[in-house]
Length: 158
Image (spheres, rainbow, N blue to C red):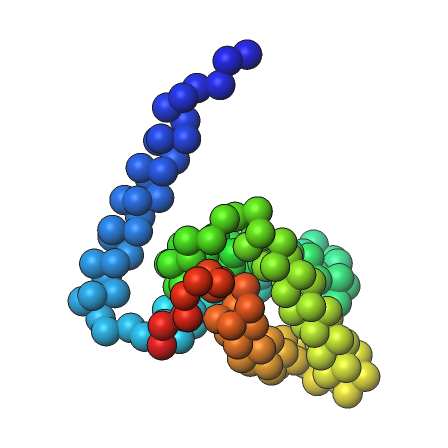
């Protein structure tokens, strides 16, 4: 089977259109990089929590459900943060490896904090996940900004 030479072009065109719409939105609302991180992270978190809620509703343990949800949230976070928050120009191969490592650490932090709060301390599911999300969000911003989505030749903007 011969690859379609227009497939990559169509994908790049679609991403460019999305970027243009997003840039227009951001220019209408003066969003700093951190606020863009929060908006995009919020979308990824919404996916995480939606998967978690779906799995809990199907009878899965809350701990297993949040771990599974975090995987889906991480995939969404990579795409959104790479394209729209940090405007990263580094190669996906290298950047995705750094992101995967940071996502693994974030996933572990999420699991550890949620387990400690929900199973050990007895904090209700939603509150435990909310507190866990605050801590992982702050940690992720610092790691993404300074380690993952930076090109070695340039310093990330504020």
